[in-house]
Image 1 (cartoon, rainbow over the protein chains, first blue to last red):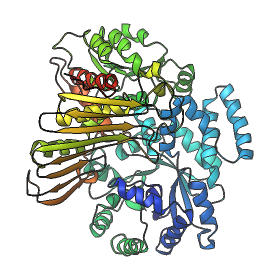
Image 2: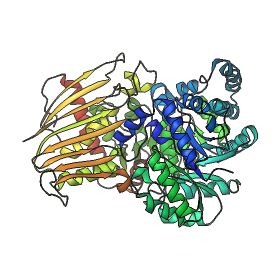
Image 3: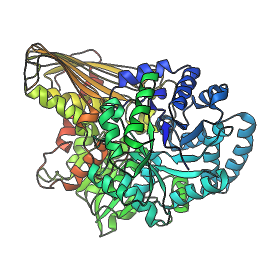
Image 4: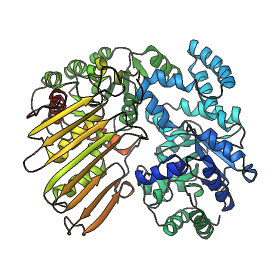
Length: 290
Length: 338
């Protein structure tokens, strides 16, 4: 089972949909991974059970900082992989081939050697499924020493597979995360309804979907109303994201909205200050009974 | 209806997935020259039709649409062959590497029947830039005095290997890459300049430009453009246009439109106003990497073939390429691009 409240990582990597300037200034503040760990400790104190953490190049140092704090030993990590921006930028610079080379050359050298050997063998045999498995293994390597209840396929890739109709990708992901990592496979998406329908049609019952869900309807495609009706059908577990609309929403109204939808049981919430974390805790208790 | 996707790199994948989600768009055939990519598709999605040579698909009677997402220098020759068979073509930006090859390709379709051709200047669908343009047209900042348009990314901080950075395949450097967006949006905002000067420079790449700047002159005002793909610390490419007018200033980027007005205008109060993407963006039927991609393909999908007008039409892109050519040619000299 995943946690009811999970801390979001966007701010730590400078992502803010509402203001790039604000995002940049937060990225600077969190250049020191101990600062991220400090916020995680505060988030845990205020009820968050874990953190959503993309496989950003700074993630290993953040995880190391978390391990330095004994009170965060049971703080659970939710990898959201791959961190797409690094691959988008790499594919722009070096093409698809160069990007694939990068995937297979990350991680510490001793593990890289082993995975590279398997990845290289898979490449020579043109065993693409094995190549995906090795790539996922490399992405998840930094999280090895942490409790990981679920692993999310980044919405960029999940939605690409959805659009192309490549549902076999979902099966590969599902099998790999369940069998090899003993974790719940999660699917990030900006297309909650279409994704839930595709996963169900592919035979993946009651999937875990991470998608925007907020009072403004921001990033809720094809519309807020259709997403609400789909969630009410109860055929999947939603991890709601963008719940505070990148800080644009009034928190009281935002949590009241979430509380009015019984299907919203789990949410990922970005917060970087003690005051916001405390406020969120109060409002979650008030409107969602968390 | 069947859509041919020519080129299955980053943008080809994005467009293929988005087209499949359009009403009636489910049937696609992918043409990709890389054997590795073809083998990968066959292994992971065996039901997907994938061919090595796009020309094979042109004999297919079911073919109604085509998307060209190959390296820029190949757009025009591919377009000429595809246009002889399919009039509804979406071409990734820029339409061609230069105005002459673009014009020659455009002439394949008779004037008055080019409405089905659109080019991938996706920022034209950004709700923020459309709002900024609406406010400018409504006179929010008064008489325009000066503008500053920039587009930066961190794509090339050291010599890079992709075709984008090799003159032969790309047909140019940052001028055609970020520059085509920047020039297109600046022309959209302010129209064709009467005169311009331009200057390009290489910072890290051998044989292509990494940065350019250009000064555009109009009757009564002027403005500056600058683009670089070698700017450190840009998480992703970002376009910004700042306008100074007799009644204040407007700034638009991919997160907000901000105004500071001396007196109320265009329905806005005096002082500061900020409209962010979270307030202006509307949902789309299918969102992959940004709503603008779905909106631009939907507009193309539904555009009437008859007539030449429309957002991102061939005529608009011919104008953009005329400006890009002029910037490249100028090297500090004043040029009349019209």
